[in-house]
Image 1 (cartoon, rainbow, N blue to C red):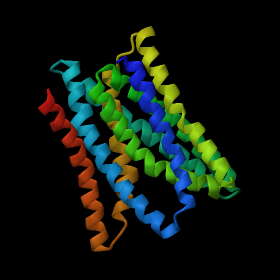
Image 2 (tube, rainbow, N blue to C red):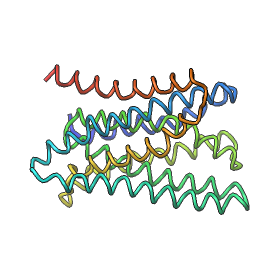
Image 3 (cartoon, rainbow, N blue to C red):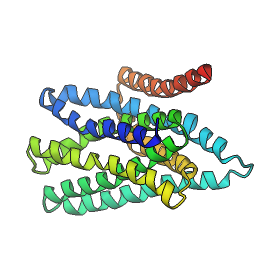
Image 4 (cartoon, rainbow, N blue to C red):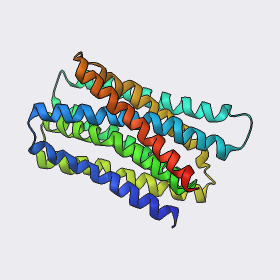
Length: 252
């Protein structure tokens, strides 16, 4: 099947995650918090597993050279870009919050639009290197998008939008992942864009999101049983990615 078909299909599925905000209509705050933390733990494990068990090994394999420094520099660049982007957004959140909630909501929408477009580029590059790496990359992105989109929905409602407006706006920003996917696919053909460097770049994104945003959230709970549960779910995310790797080897 054409990589573009895979790219559009998977990014469209990722875009539908934005509608999960509707679930908050049927959950009380306490239950929602519990579910979110479990999803955060699973997403963190999935991102770590995706980065170190799939993206980096595949990038090294595709690169085919002894000197892998350029690949690891790409990983560092991916990590640093998301650090700078997040710091910029947080700085604006801090200054906007003293005046009105609305600016914060618009900044969340802007940052999500950029983030999702980059995710689309990453998915496109992955599928150009093979269906397996494309599906794993899309799955890792989807895992961290689930808790993120639920959280973003809450921010938009808190910022003054009603629930219907928040759902629609959340979907519009999430759908830019499709645009990024299509753009990434055609960039490769038009300008000879090399997707192999996008794999470690995406791995850097994944490691940053997991280590800076997700893992700190699940570490805050001091209850031993809850902490053990969160760690088990985190490990299950890694094991899930390992299982995909081993299954693929068994079928090869």
